[in-house]
Image (cartoon, rainbow, N blue to C red; front, side, top):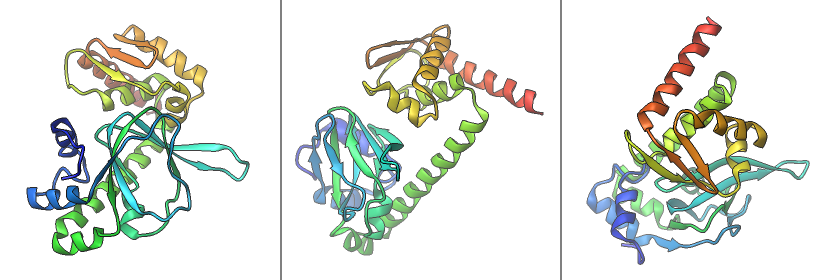
Length: 238
C-alpha cells in the first residue's frame, strides 16, 4: 500500500469509479505502486504535452484541469475533488497529457505511475476494465455538461453541482469549495456575476455560502427544487 494512506483515504479510494470495483488483490497491487502527493494551492501537477506518467485520485482538496487557447487564455476543462480521478485516459494510452493540472487548494493526491500499469493490467485484466469504465464515465459527464449548459438555468446548474458533491442524500451537510468561485462559474458555463445570482436564488432553498464553505440545510429540499425547475423547463420547451 502507498505510504501515507489513511483509513479515510482507503474509504475514498474504494468509492471511486476507477478503483472502487477492483478486488482486494488487484487494488493492493495498484496501491503498492502509488505515491501520496500534497501539492499546494497554485502548484502545477503536470503540464499539457508532458508524458502521461501517472493518473491521480483526489483524496482531499480541489484540482483544476485546463488548456491554454491559441489566444493565450485559460480554458477550464474540469475541476475535481475528493473521490474523483483524472488523467487515467492519458496514462492508459501511454501518451501525453492533453491538458494541464493545478492545485486549486492545498490538496492530497494518490498518484499511480503508469510505467508498471500495463504489467498490472496483464496480471489483473479487471484493472483495465475499471479504467475504461472510468474514462467512459468522464465522457458521459462531459456530454451531460454540454446538455445542461443548453437546457438548464444557472440556478439549476449550481443546484446539480452542489448535489453532486453533497456527502449525504438527506439532511444537512457542508461542502468545501474552491476559494476562487470563478472556477465553478467557468465549469458551469456561467459568468461570475451569474454564479452570484444563482447562489442568491438558492439561498431561499437552504443553501448558504461563507468564503469557501457552502452549507446545504436540507439536501432533499434542494433536490426537489432542481427536479421542479427541470420539469418546468421541459414543459416550457414542449
